[in-house]
Length: 371
Image (cartoon, rainbow, N blue to C red; front, side, top):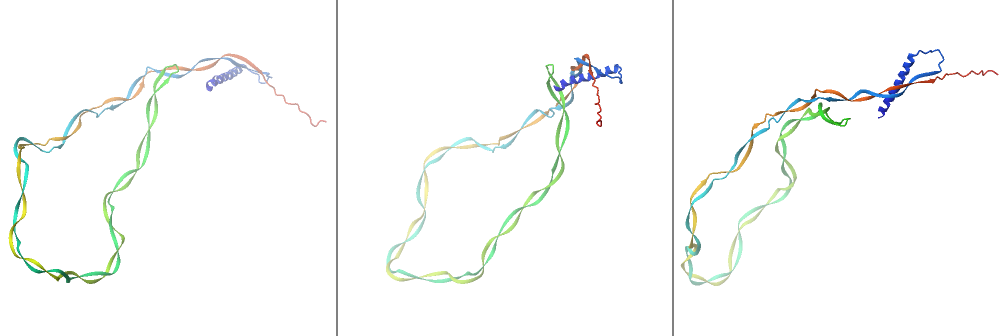
């Protein structure tokens, strides 16, 4: 705003200076005469005229495609469904004809002897003396030996364990350092701004956009294990006692018990025996006392295995060749027309102005030595 106010003022002052120079140049002046005043032309009124064009508009331009791209190539247009059996059932056996047969519904059990034996029983008893009290003493039949430790020492106890160790390595390359590269790409951006006359102006503006991508500039190698093996290690976990000197002792390992009677009493004994038949083992025989009819199968048929689980797959049988689409437009043709001019101020009326010229008069000298 300040610049717009100062521009006409500065323009007016320059015009005044030029007019004064022109006036002075047209009239010859006497440089040796005594000039009492200085005169020049001063502008009293200004007028505004149309200056340079500051805003242009294109009329009659049209948008034309300058870059094409292919869209939709390889897109599937037609599919075909396929199916495959993943699991089959087992062969199934079914009955085609039935018959009836009797079966027992109530069973009774009878206990019968399965094995006999002859056993002797006493038929007549006699009298005899029998021992009422016994005493015992033992006789050693076999001896054994035992060892007793009289001197011991300590032996370290070892425990074994396994550790996993790499048996085979492989070397792989990987990127150790990356570098970021950039490039500048031209891009057209739509712009909508309000025109100074009131309507909305739509046009495209070209900008520069930076795009970045990363590349690898240094590679390094890394060693990784691909196969492991178990390695056996020994570790001392303590001490245990061990005998280094034994003493052998003799002891009895088999004794025989000898019995002798200390008190006799009279007793009965059998002096006549007879054989009697006795059942040694019994068995249970089952007898049916009630029957019922039960159906059963007389004819079978085996059904083949059938599919019980299917998997479906969809494959493409026809793909699109794609179609062209405009990726970038350019404005061509048209005419450039000025829509706004700058205002220019010029002098419309001048006035002659004169001013007096100051004359320098030096001060009078005073004689300081005069009495």
